[in-house]
Image 1 (tube, rainbow, N blue to C red):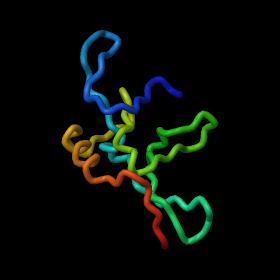
Image 2 (cartoon, rainbow, N blue to C red):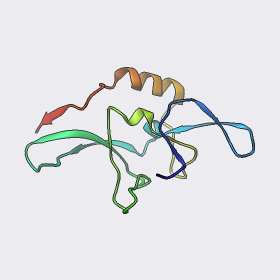
Image 3 (cartoon, helix red, strand yellow):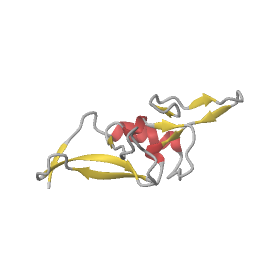
Length: 108
């Protein structure tokens, strides 16, 4: 696992210099997009979230996608493609309250 990725939801962390810096939440980035995922090839799908900037990669180089009900926890220390969509703490709080707690299956 890459050490730059964090899955807790605390708002600030200490950097190497000892100063406090804010985390970047991927869900608050303009590159974080909701897409249908159809693993079985039938008319059912799950909603997943991907980074259109290509920043989420597995160790084997494949693109990583996340369940939309868990993406609010994904945060990193820095990202050269990050473009905020608004005030982070308020957005993440609202997102956590509005996202379902479990995956939902949809039909085309």
